Image (cartoon, rainbow, N blue to C red):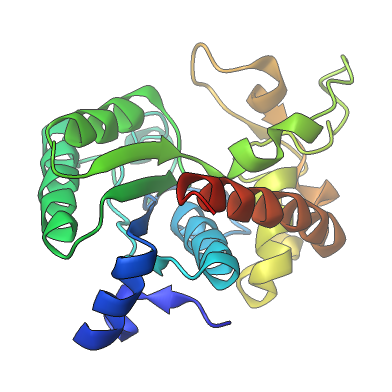
Length: 238
Protein backbone atom coordinates (compact mmCIF):
# COMPACT_ATOMS: atom_id res chain seq x y z
CA UNK A 1 0.00 0.00 0.00
CA UNK A 2 1.25 3.48 -0.87
CA UNK A 3 1.11 6.25 1.73
CA UNK A 4 -2.06 8.35 1.61
CA UNK A 5 -0.60 11.83 1.20
CA UNK A 6 -3.30 14.49 1.43
CA UNK A 7 -1.85 16.55 -1.41
CA UNK A 8 -1.93 13.51 -3.73
CA UNK A 9 -5.59 12.66 -3.16
CA UNK A 10 -8.67 13.68 -5.13
CA UNK A 11 -11.82 14.86 -3.32
CA UNK A 12 -13.61 11.54 -3.84
CA UNK A 13 -10.63 9.63 -2.45
CA UNK A 14 -10.40 11.82 0.65
CA UNK A 15 -14.12 11.44 1.37
CA UNK A 16 -13.89 7.66 1.02
CA UNK A 17 -10.90 7.40 3.37
CA UNK A 18 -12.34 9.79 5.97
CA UNK A 19 -15.58 7.81 6.09
CA UNK A 20 -13.62 4.78 7.34
CA UNK A 21 -10.47 6.27 8.90
CA UNK A 22 -11.14 9.83 10.16
CA UNK A 23 -7.62 10.30 11.56
CA UNK A 24 -4.91 12.45 10.02
CA UNK A 25 -1.17 12.41 10.70
CA UNK A 26 0.53 15.82 10.70
CA UNK A 27 4.35 15.65 10.65
CA UNK A 28 6.09 18.56 12.38
CA UNK A 29 9.80 19.32 12.24
CA UNK A 30 12.25 22.21 12.36
CA UNK A 31 15.01 23.80 10.38
CA UNK A 32 17.87 23.17 12.78
CA UNK A 33 21.60 22.55 13.06
CA UNK A 34 22.40 18.83 13.01
CA UNK A 35 26.20 19.05 12.83
CA UNK A 36 28.05 18.97 9.52
CA UNK A 37 27.13 15.44 8.41
CA UNK A 38 23.34 15.81 8.37
CA UNK A 39 20.94 18.19 6.59
CA UNK A 40 19.04 20.92 8.40
CA UNK A 41 15.74 19.12 7.90
CA UNK A 42 16.50 15.93 9.84
CA UNK A 43 13.55 16.36 12.22
CA UNK A 44 11.13 16.89 9.33
CA UNK A 45 12.59 14.17 7.10
CA UNK A 46 12.54 11.40 9.70
CA UNK A 47 9.13 12.35 11.03
CA UNK A 48 7.60 12.58 7.58
CA UNK A 49 9.03 9.20 6.57
CA UNK A 50 7.72 7.56 9.74
CA UNK A 51 4.26 8.99 9.05
CA UNK A 52 4.35 7.71 5.48
CA UNK A 53 5.33 4.23 6.66
CA UNK A 54 2.54 4.23 9.25
CA UNK A 55 0.11 5.35 6.54
CA UNK A 56 1.15 2.40 4.39
CA UNK A 57 0.21 0.04 7.20
CA UNK A 58 -3.03 1.71 8.22
CA UNK A 59 -4.44 3.63 5.27
CA UNK A 60 -4.70 6.91 7.19
CA UNK A 61 -4.01 10.24 5.54
CA UNK A 62 -0.75 12.18 6.04
CA UNK A 63 -0.91 15.97 5.88
CA UNK A 64 1.88 18.13 4.44
CA UNK A 65 4.83 18.50 6.81
CA UNK A 66 5.19 21.62 8.94
CA UNK A 67 8.91 22.41 9.03
CA UNK A 68 8.40 25.46 11.23
CA UNK A 69 8.83 24.16 14.75
CA UNK A 70 10.26 26.05 17.70
CA UNK A 71 14.02 25.80 18.17
CA UNK A 72 15.54 27.94 20.89
CA UNK A 73 18.39 25.83 22.27
CA UNK A 74 20.85 25.77 19.36
CA UNK A 75 21.14 29.39 18.32
CA UNK A 76 23.00 30.37 15.12
CA UNK A 77 24.69 33.21 17.02
CA UNK A 78 26.26 30.58 19.28
CA UNK A 79 27.75 28.54 16.45
CA UNK A 80 24.76 26.43 15.39
CA UNK A 81 24.48 27.73 11.84
CA UNK A 82 21.24 27.01 10.03
CA UNK A 83 18.88 26.89 12.98
CA UNK A 84 15.74 28.94 12.39
CA UNK A 85 15.04 30.20 15.90
CA UNK A 86 12.74 33.06 14.95
CA UNK A 87 9.35 31.28 14.90
CA UNK A 88 7.24 32.52 17.82
CA UNK A 89 5.33 30.10 20.02
CA UNK A 90 2.13 32.01 19.30
CA UNK A 91 2.72 31.65 15.55
CA UNK A 92 3.12 27.88 15.69
CA UNK A 93 0.23 27.46 18.12
CA UNK A 94 -2.09 29.50 15.91
CA UNK A 95 -1.03 27.64 12.77
CA UNK A 96 -1.67 24.28 14.42
CA UNK A 97 -5.12 25.41 15.56
CA UNK A 98 -6.06 26.83 12.16
CA UNK A 99 -4.94 23.71 10.32
CA UNK A 100 -6.82 21.46 12.74
CA UNK A 101 -10.00 23.44 12.13
CA UNK A 102 -9.50 23.06 8.38
CA UNK A 103 -8.95 19.32 8.64
CA UNK A 104 -12.03 19.03 10.85
CA UNK A 105 -14.06 20.55 8.00
CA UNK A 106 -12.92 17.64 5.83
CA UNK A 107 -14.44 15.22 8.34
CA UNK A 108 -11.38 14.22 10.33
CA UNK A 109 -12.19 13.66 14.01
CA UNK A 110 -8.67 12.85 15.26
CA UNK A 111 -5.25 14.28 14.44
CA UNK A 112 -1.80 13.22 15.55
CA UNK A 113 0.76 16.01 15.59
CA UNK A 114 3.81 13.80 15.00
CA UNK A 115 6.87 15.78 15.98
CA UNK A 116 10.42 14.99 14.99
CA UNK A 117 11.65 17.62 17.45
CA UNK A 118 11.28 18.19 21.17
CA UNK A 119 11.99 21.08 23.42
CA UNK A 120 9.64 22.67 25.92
CA UNK A 121 8.71 25.75 23.87
CA UNK A 122 7.95 23.60 20.82
CA UNK A 123 5.83 21.14 22.80
CA UNK A 124 3.87 23.82 24.64
CA UNK A 125 3.16 25.74 21.42
CA UNK A 126 1.72 22.64 19.74
CA UNK A 127 -0.28 21.70 22.83
CA UNK A 128 -1.64 25.24 23.02
CA UNK A 129 -2.78 24.97 19.40
CA UNK A 130 -4.45 21.63 20.06
CA UNK A 131 -6.28 23.00 23.08
CA UNK A 132 -7.75 25.89 21.08
CA UNK A 133 -9.76 23.51 18.90
CA UNK A 134 -12.86 21.57 19.93
CA UNK A 135 -13.94 20.27 16.51
CA UNK A 136 -11.19 17.63 16.31
CA UNK A 137 -9.24 15.73 18.96
CA UNK A 138 -5.51 16.37 18.68
CA UNK A 139 -2.61 14.40 20.14
CA UNK A 140 1.11 15.18 20.38
CA UNK A 141 3.38 12.21 19.64
CA UNK A 142 6.99 11.57 18.63
CA UNK A 143 8.57 8.63 16.74
CA UNK A 144 10.92 7.68 19.64
CA UNK A 145 7.84 6.99 21.77
CA UNK A 146 7.14 3.94 19.64
CA UNK A 147 10.41 2.26 20.59
CA UNK A 148 10.88 3.55 24.15
CA UNK A 149 9.82 0.19 25.62
CA UNK A 150 13.02 -1.29 24.15
CA UNK A 151 15.42 1.33 25.54
CA UNK A 152 18.19 -0.25 27.59
CA UNK A 153 19.67 1.98 30.30
CA UNK A 154 23.25 0.73 30.45
CA UNK A 155 24.18 3.13 33.24
CA UNK A 156 27.37 4.36 31.57
CA UNK A 157 26.39 7.29 29.31
CA UNK A 158 29.54 6.84 27.23
CA UNK A 159 27.94 3.68 25.82
CA UNK A 160 25.21 3.67 23.19
CA UNK A 161 21.99 2.71 24.91
CA UNK A 162 19.88 0.66 22.46
CA UNK A 163 16.87 2.59 21.13
CA UNK A 164 17.63 5.75 23.16
CA UNK A 165 17.06 8.92 21.14
CA UNK A 166 19.51 11.79 20.71
CA UNK A 167 20.34 14.84 18.61
CA UNK A 168 22.37 14.32 15.41
CA UNK A 169 24.11 11.26 16.85
CA UNK A 170 23.58 7.49 16.93
CA UNK A 171 19.77 7.50 16.75
CA UNK A 172 19.12 10.29 14.27
CA UNK A 173 22.14 9.59 12.09
CA UNK A 174 21.30 5.89 11.87
CA UNK A 175 17.72 6.66 10.88
CA UNK A 176 19.01 9.01 8.18
CA UNK A 177 21.51 6.40 6.96
CA UNK A 178 18.68 3.89 6.65
CA UNK A 179 16.08 6.11 5.00
CA UNK A 180 18.16 8.82 3.28
CA UNK A 181 21.77 7.60 2.90
CA UNK A 182 22.44 10.00 0.04
CA UNK A 183 21.90 12.94 2.42
CA UNK A 184 24.45 11.83 5.02
CA UNK A 185 28.17 12.64 4.85
CA UNK A 186 29.78 10.39 7.45
CA UNK A 187 33.22 11.76 6.56
CA UNK A 188 32.06 15.03 8.13
CA UNK A 189 30.59 13.44 11.25
CA UNK A 190 32.30 14.68 14.42
CA UNK A 191 33.65 12.23 16.94
CA UNK A 192 31.35 13.69 19.58
CA UNK A 193 28.44 16.09 19.82
CA UNK A 194 28.17 18.03 23.06
CA UNK A 195 24.99 19.99 23.68
CA UNK A 196 24.92 22.98 26.02
CA UNK A 197 21.24 22.93 26.92
CA UNK A 198 20.44 22.98 30.63
CA UNK A 199 18.20 20.27 32.00
CA UNK A 200 18.66 17.69 29.25
CA UNK A 201 19.39 14.06 30.21
CA UNK A 202 23.09 13.32 30.61
CA UNK A 203 22.81 10.61 27.97
CA UNK A 204 21.85 13.18 25.32
CA UNK A 205 24.36 15.81 26.41
CA UNK A 206 27.36 14.00 24.86
CA UNK A 207 26.88 11.57 21.98
CA UNK A 208 28.88 9.80 19.29
CA UNK A 209 27.53 10.12 15.72
CA UNK A 210 30.31 8.04 14.12
CA UNK A 211 28.82 4.97 15.76
CA UNK A 212 25.74 5.29 13.56
CA UNK A 213 24.97 2.64 10.93
CA UNK A 214 22.19 1.97 8.45
CA UNK A 215 21.74 -1.42 10.09
CA UNK A 216 20.98 0.23 13.42
CA UNK A 217 18.62 2.61 11.64
CA UNK A 218 16.77 -0.37 10.19
CA UNK A 219 16.53 -1.90 13.67
CA UNK A 220 15.04 1.33 14.99
CA UNK A 221 12.55 1.56 12.13
CA UNK A 222 11.51 -2.05 12.60
CA UNK A 223 10.55 -1.19 16.18
CA UNK A 224 8.98 2.20 15.52
CA UNK A 225 6.78 1.45 12.51
CA UNK A 226 4.90 -1.64 13.77
CA UNK A 227 4.23 0.02 17.11
CA UNK A 228 3.08 3.18 15.34
CA UNK A 229 0.73 1.14 13.16
CA UNK A 230 -0.59 -0.66 16.24
CA UNK A 231 -1.26 2.65 18.01
CA UNK A 232 -3.15 4.12 15.06
CA UNK A 233 -5.27 1.01 14.64
CA UNK A 234 -6.15 1.13 18.33
CA UNK A 235 -7.21 4.77 17.98
CA UNK A 236 -9.39 3.81 15.01
CA UNK A 237 -10.94 0.94 16.97
CA UNK A 238 -9.62 -1.67 14.57
